[in-house]
Image (cartoon, rainbow, N blue to C red; front, side, top):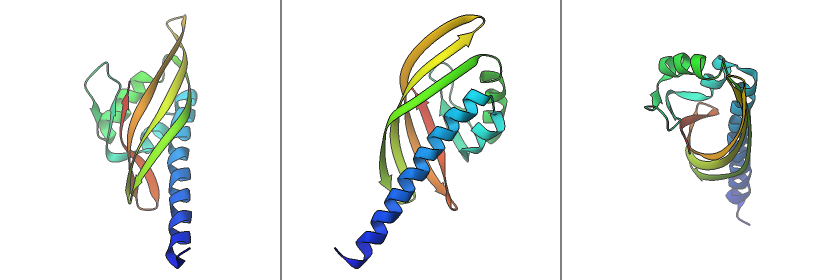
Length: 133
């Protein structure tokens, strides 16, 4: 094994774990209706595309829309089968979603996936974009 390869392996493992943590924290914030927490996981110019409206771009728009989207209904997301491709200070990923929700008194179950782009911002990983399918 080359001298630098073990350091590269450790960095890649740390990066993957940090990205998985961003995804898990996002689901946790949605469960808790933590708008500030969810939006803080996006880069300043980050984007969320829920598929049912125009993409939400930038911190101010994310704060406004998440204030509407996650504070009323009960959303309980479960994410799994996370696949991550590292590209230096950027990465792409897909994670699958099982969603239990209560909207206007109706209980629903849904499934789909997030197609994510991640960006290293300083020492942290953030969502550059999320697209829900």
